[in-house]
Image (cartoon, rainbow, N blue to C red; front, side, top):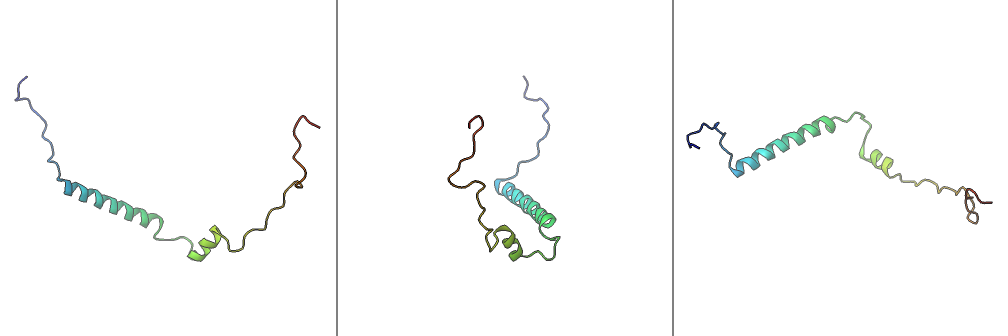
Length: 81
């Protein structure tokens, strides 16, 4: 094999600090685009933090559900009397 074989020229590699900076810039631009697309313009103008919090964890807990069967009875099993 000869050392004079033709190689395709490679692009020069970036230094580590340049690669890290490039990745952080791309990440910041991507996060900014995601924020702008989904969070910058809420659809409902009446939407506020208190309303969202109330829908997630209401201040008045729901009434306790009553059991379908009394406590001293068990559900019947199939095939038994």
